Image (cartoon, rainbow, N blue to C red; front, side, top):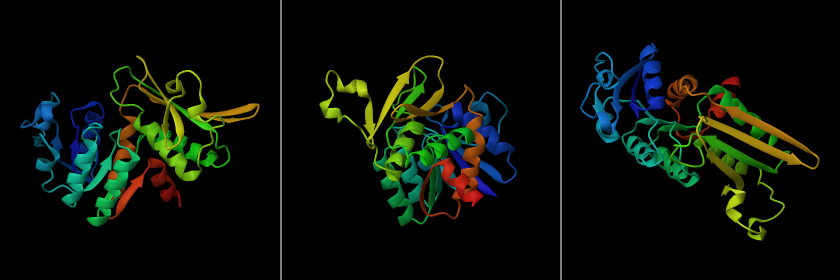
Amino acid sequence: MINVCIAGATGWAGRALVRGVLEADDLVLRSAVARSAAGADLGRALGGEALGVPVHGSVEEALDGVDVLIDYTSHTAVKTNALTAIERGVAVVIGASGATAADYAEIDVAARQHNVGVIAAGNFSLTAALAQAAALLVAPHLPQAEIIDYASATKPDAPSGTSRELAERFAQVRAPVVDRPLQETDGLREARGAAVAGVQVHSIRLPSFSVSTEIVFGLPDERLTIRHDAGPSAAPYVSGTLLAVRLVIGRVGLTRGLDTLLLERRG
């Protein structure tokens, strides 16, 4: 059995993950982290019957007897939470968005030093992983590409974790090509989006979107677009996250992307 702690357990994704862990016969939900519900039983905090799962105000307090921390908190907390778990010898699955490539480099070094595994994905849904795998397959052949990132009007971070991860992994496959350097752009350079690992990313924040990611590749007289759209439910992220929980045990260092795990299993 794998003992699990969920950080962000009372949030949008966290609630779906609580149900997923409780329904799994090989996982045990040992504890949860949610500052707004600290000191309560998780079941009561979620408006139901008591579960016998304590809610803590910080990750540091919640790790006794835990094998894997699932983090679906925020961009302001995820790095600290991950490093805290790693120092305690606890493996980490990161679903929260907002961590940068530099953050992940630091997490990877710490994980290797403490001989534990970390799996992070900007999006743990199966269809998003397949869209990312397809885009990375195309990238070496069509290096001119930009990313459009759609999310709800209230999403606090930009770009989304999905788009940031995709841009950073593009750069590892092949350096992106920009015909006209940004410094030579007339007018407002900000209109060209933000450069993430050299890839231009445009974040749109409007009501009615959950999270959508569009990768547009261009060649003279033709284009290829790969797009992923997520609905309002967090259910698509559960199976991918729990797959990562099962596979992070015994790993060392950082693995990025659900598509990486899927390709490993196929191999």
